[in-house]
Image (cartoon, rainbow, N blue to C red):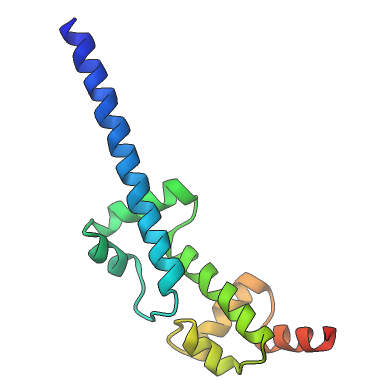
Length: 129
């Protein structure tokens, strides 16, 4: 009976840890969603705010979302950038508003995720209208 009770207690603790881990990962993603424009947003910044080790947070997010924190940040920023470009904002201003440290970095990441430069994307939208 003792071994059975210990086994059940272990399963309960493990289940509670997994739920806690999921909540930490969810909180990190909520911060990314709302604070994507913060140029200092990073795994280290998130870990500090959530009071966990950066490597631990990175593993939690990756196992919950199948993507790393830098990728989630970039995807969110590019998603917002595309919307801003649709409304005619200048590329330099979009880069600034979406948390990129400079226009060159913004352009590089935009090409990686969209397959064209921000200006090409903006021109394509203008042509569709």
